[in-house]
Image (cartoon, rainbow, N blue to C red; front, side):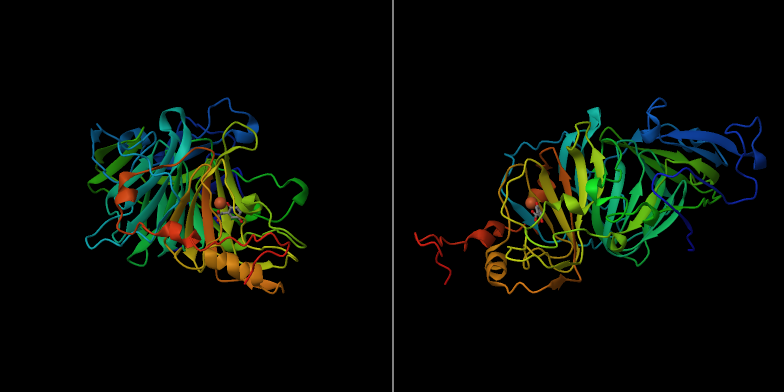
Amino acid sequence: MSDAYMPGFGNDFETESLPNALPQGQNSPQKCNYGLYAEQLSGSPFTAPRGTNERSWLYRIRPSVRHTARFSSHARDHWKTAPHICDDVMPIGQLRWDPVPMPDEPVNFIDGVRTMTTAGDVHTQVGMASHAYICNAPMGDDYFFNADAELLIVPQIGTLEIFTELGRMTVAPTEIAMIPRGMIFQVDPADGEARGYICENYGAKFTLPDRGPIGANCLANPRDFKTPVAAWEDKETDCRVHVKWCGQFYVTEIGHSPLDVIAWHGNYAPFKYDLKTFSPVGAILFDHPDPSIFTVLTAPSGEEGTANIDFVIFPPRWMVAEHTFRPPWYHRNIMSEFMGLVHGQYDAKEEGFVPGGMSLHNMMLPHGPDTMGFEKASEAELAPTKLDETLAFMFETRFPQHVTSYAMQLETLQDNYIDCWKGLKKRFDGSIEGNWD
Ligand SMILES: O=C(O)Cc1cc(O)ccc1O
Ligand SMILES: [Fe+2]
């Protein structure tokens, strides 16, 4: 598959896959060229202020109302939606999982979504869910859209071929993809098998964080975000469109592919982004800064500085701080932290937190480096060192994350996670040096 992309974050893009398919100077001609139907997809209220007003105009073979017929409900057991509070007592401790095992039977991307946590309330469009996905089969004639949320996809194993109404994206581990709320798509594992993470954002869209005194450059730069050019298929087979709507799942049968947009323009669009292009800014003299310096994207909550979700990464970087305990400090946080590891090691937990694994440090629950990490960092010679070949990330939300019973019953839940702090012994002996032997 050959993909082509347009650079920029939130730009007003335009793209056509046939000459003159895109009307010029107007959105809604009396008759569109090629007999196409014009359709607006609104990602914000019509009257949203200019800076957050998002919509695209799609020129397509059939309007999407013909891509949906009567809906019937369709059970999907593993994809949960907030509010989803299990009957069991909420496990509030620190939690960590090894990767979700790959399935033996064929499972496509949508059927392979496994909800780990939910937060907030989909009905009021606040909060999020953290999912793992596992998949080893293409979607074939099945298509999907999520009316509840945009989807931030973080591949960990296997490249994904993502075909959306607005075009095709190839997304490999170390890259991320964003699929806007309401947009129809298909995802196929290019290498036969794929695993990764999804942040389902029920709230206001992810955007770039302000950089404050950092200025006009660094962190995630807008030109590194890539939106696909128009691509389509004209397929007349028994296709199904699956829908997630207020936590329920539905399906409708149609006789053709809904991915039939020949041209489009606007700023409500999918994108991908290579996390290797994130330019970290950090401590160049002493102390460990707050991880907000590594925010790639932030989804605002309406309260200033208090994100519905921050998507934060821990990329390769030089550690140079003098007279400093360099890994994350011990801390308690009003925000709830769900973490994953794309590859390598995380400096606060060199063992036990493995690629494809997950951890949850919920609202106000203490955490920090394990015993080994603490001892190593306390004694390390503080020469400049590079943390290399590593990529961890965090979905951090202002809301408590409720763990699903699937996550609690997962065979890869680590029963002994909290033992990683057991060896943090008392070093206070009344002397100013403390007892470090
Ligand atoms: O808990 C974690 O490992 C994530 C994290 C990293 C960091 O550098 C500072 C704070 C924080 O929550
Ligand atoms: Fe933390």
